[in-house]
Image (tube, rainbow, N blue to C red; front, side, top):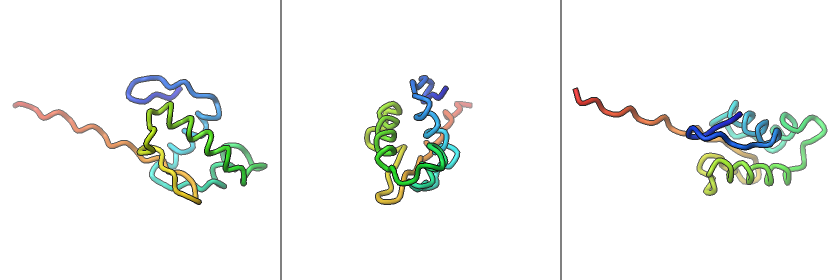
Length: 93
């Protein structure tokens, strides 16, 4: 199960696999070929239309319609950008 901001995300198994893969490589650009081979399997590699569909679905479910969390790198692939950790509240001591 995946969650964001304490809310469980209702992901299909392939959406979860894609998100997990991108999370393992957070901050790095993952090429279309790498993602297809590692998430869909060795028989895939050129079907970038699959990625457009699944990244669109992930963005909607993550509430990331503007692509701030899941970046598209045109002609290359995708990059999951780690969200900054919230700053601790200042102590009044």
